[in-house]
Figure 1 (cartoon, helix red, strand yellow):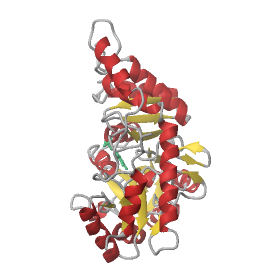
Figure 2 (cartoon, helix red, strand yellow):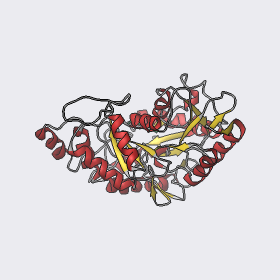
Figure 3 (cartoon, helix red, strand yellow):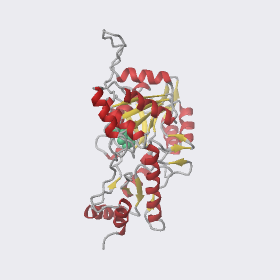
Figure 4 (cartoon, protein in one colour):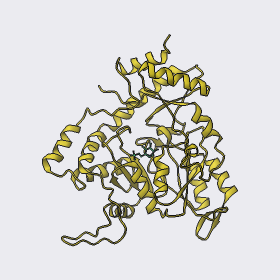
Length: 381
Ligand SMILES: *Cc1c(COP(=O)(O)O)cnc(C)c1O
């Protein structure tokens, strides 16, 4: 007999077709705004929709400025770069994340350091961070140094897993004591609130958002750096625009720049999506509470938002009682044509990152074997 979960998910999405993990919906002004960019010929990296999207998101998230870029990975990369992360540095993050977090660190010539997650948020654990720093690091005149390698710990990158906010006050307390900047990987958590404040507005100076096709708001491909200071946003705009000094006819570039600007075509899609963001979150939360009710009283534990937060429930997840129960469920889902997915393989288990410095990763390993993501698309009307 078929697992009743699949019947439940079919009812939730009211379809007999294949059910994807996360598909976007375009039920607002998407076509209209994209059409505008074509008619205006401003399809490339300058245009009114880019400015509008930056202003809308800076306002919404409660930060001083925002800079639109080509994807979330590049947003992370320039946020880290602007925070002084470079060749030979260390950046502490969680092993349970999407690989982009680590790749952004790697391509700056730095290395990720893995610290365990908390079972409260599934994001970076403040206690584990404190333990790692106490045991391995020392504060010097140049900042926090990892004693054994002599390398500097330049930043901590907590990631709000599946949209659930990390324990930020506790992380800030640890990072202040150790003189380390916090850069939020808020790729999954647009619209999530930590004690009433938006994810992406909680770190030291910068946060990264992603607008990839599978995120809560999509621009096709895209990302954004949220900046707590206007001057930081101006600098980010400068270096993501080839570091060109504005001039009416001459080319002058005052540092090694990036070409990471988001095209206006993509920003147009984003502006239309943004108008619907709060409605998307409402539906996400209805879906999440349906799942929660479904799993109540079973030995599959639905992952709930932490008490201090309002999560956007970007991706719903359930904790299976064992690895074998997880494998059974995933196998059944293929047959049922309902897309379920194992959580990412932890970064410290990937060949490319397995040599990285790490703390105790007990919880990461535990959750990695048991977490399954559930279909979470916003439903149309
Ligand atoms: C989606 C995502 C990113 C960035 O993704 P892009 O595809 O580059 O936009 C970064 N970190 C996490 C945790 C993500 O989920």
